[in-house]
Length: 388
Ligand code: GLY
Image 1: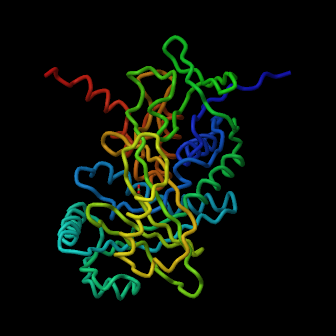
Image 2 (image 1 turned 180 degrees about the vertical axis):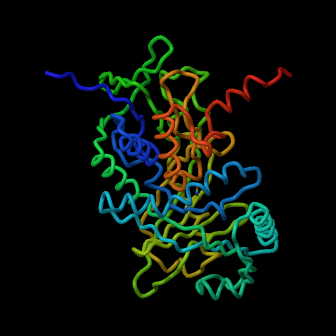
Image 3 (image 1 turned 135 degrees about the horizontal axis):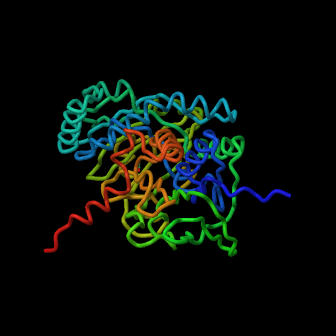
């Protein structure tokens, strides 16, 4: 009788980041297992799925932009490969995005964003309010102008998660449908994890991909624990009845009184409206205030929204990091790697994360585009901090 093989890689967390890591690792011949009570769950069940490297650009995040663009470029092939392997339609829609301004302040903000996009070599076009409404007739008459970004697309994250579970199954990834309680460390090396029922799972390497929970995974030494925190986002789902279709033909977004609001129309008739951004720890309550804020802001952009059935309200937790960028690759603890901290860009960064993690797991080195995102960057910052 042969003993069961200890996997080369044990991925803690079966959200889209853990799943893509496992799938790509297994494709490269590594025996891979995933621990998660509900693979395919997590923040992807709430996310809108914007692939928005251009319209989600922020000052100070040009390094992250490079990774976002690298992943956006991979999306067509990634989606085609996943669909071919699993037969799943991912709702990948190359529909473009329109970011609009409702008042003079929003317009100035959008003009600044346009200048930053141009300096960063990104393609976007400034449109008058009238031209915005010509593209999207449901927009409010008060829209003062906008930015058209034809390269910012969307995918349905729930379908993506479902397809990644199927891809993992087809590629021989083993699933342990249970909670991982804590990491096991023997002689300064990560050796696996212990499940909620006390079962110990061994592995040559462990990848911590537990989203916002990564920052508090028991057993990880304090100086290695990733600085990842939960950032709550409330999201609404509405349905566009046939008689109103097409309600919107592309993603429409804006900053209204300092809050981001976006409307993501799916071909299925689903319209996703998001999202709040709240630093409230582990709270995932859907609040009257959150729903009110989203509907109020969305209504200012697209008044007809109040006619649509409201079919779902939900809150999820983004894994926020100190620089809003992910943590990818080896840690200071031998045998422990991270794939977490993707914050607002988890869906967009799924293809590049899978490739980078499979590369580092097979070669020991992060590929060039992922090197700036080593978890060690935070350790270096801590070690060079001077006492006051
Ligand atoms: N990327 C959209 C969000 O985090 O709300």
